[in-house]
Length: 131
Image 1 (spheres, rainbow, N blue to C red):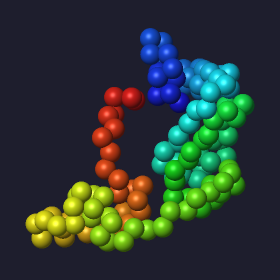
Image 2 (cartoon, helix red, strand yellow; image 1 turned 90 degrees about the vertical axis):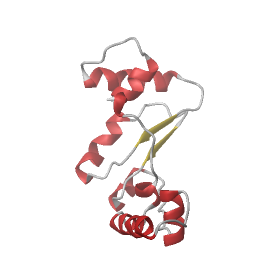
Image 3 (cartoon, helix red, strand yellow; image 1 turned 30 degrees about the vertical axis):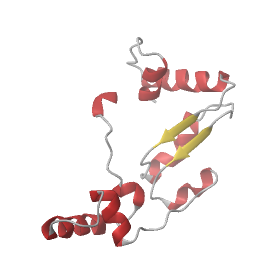
Image 4 (tube, rainbow, N blue to C red; image 1 turned 60 degrees about the vertical axis):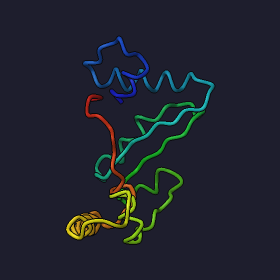
């Protein structure tokens, strides 16, 4: 939530995590426009019971939670993604299905370790500067 709070008020310093949560919830609850709040990689089942405390009261937007935990279905509509075929995973990971044999072998091993799951495979250009 600190990231979302910083996006909403870039000049404000958020030392208190609760203040950041309250700000984001209040701002999103007051908006009449559609919004999207994303909780990415919420894979720890112990985090699920408290996640609803982060949801804005007014629902003019949507909340997306990505995880690998089947128990999260209790939070709302659930969409289960299938595992990818080897060629699809190589295309996503390497941006090609052709190339050097060692590179392909290494990519196939990575895909296997990640369980061929699309959200685990997708390379990201996110910066860690959002803290």
